[in-house]
Image (cartoon, rainbow, N blue to C red; front, side, top):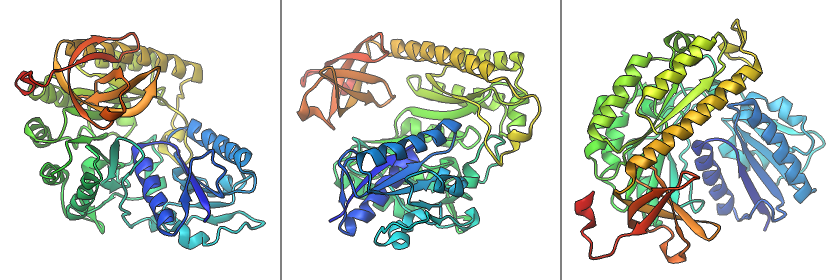
Length: 442
């Protein structure tokens, strides 16, 4: 029995796909092992959102060959689709598979026999038309369920359409079946993931269904306690979706909504499909219906043409918004994107300084949000990670809590009182006694 290990870089979508591919190996009799367990085969699922992700891929290959020098190393994922020949030249790489080939890895490589030349199976991205069902399993307390892939948007900074192809989705019926399988495994929280999940519903090039109907159908799945929506574009997060989540049985009050810039001038240069005024409306709508809702924000600093005043527009705009945390990305040039040809690039040290300012703002926003929740009651889903004798978990509205480790509480929903925000911006809690009327306090 050959041993295979997996390493995933990047987003929740990549985690779901790695898990699905690992199950294909196990079905064929391979033994899935830890990365450090000297496997015969390494499968590295790559990201290419930033230049650092590309560098990380090379570092992981180097680590793999140190652990198991005679191993067969396969690279899949976004970087593999964008730069297959470049990856093929990395010392230690035996095979590179593109977007249309990665789920047929076992067919393409069969016995995993080494060749003198690196095997490259990466066709044009136009061939990536099939939707491959995927969800993570036995990797984490929560499961990432893939509902959509690819993107039809043309944001000036983004390589994802080049790496994953056009927007396409599973059917609601298939997704419900997957959710039921997940529920049967005992998982209590499912995170819906994709490239552009608000664009859900395109099958074979035509729109057949929509995201709101998917959300409504999932809300009826027994056995899943929580559904969490991952990143969704502001122009696709309709009032109807917000209103449904606000009164749903299982969808939690947590949205992650990409902004990218608070300057309308920069949003237009980026080819974003909204202006900042729409973003304000979305946040206001959410907070009106769900005052305790957690709202995460993606923002890019240093986009070509972003002046100091443009950056201050973004900083001040976010500072005034009732949002909970930021994911800050420092703009990096990506081949074959529109932005790489744009004038007035921002010097890299200035990009870094702007990113630093926004990360400080994120900490301020996060601490303020946590402090606004002190004294309230919540249910926490506890996870198996242990650090300094403490286990961690999240409330429905994404407050991270810490609690003394108790193995019996892993994957348990625990009613708690939120007491105090720590210096590390976690929440100290006390457990609510069984006789306490917990539900009446929510």
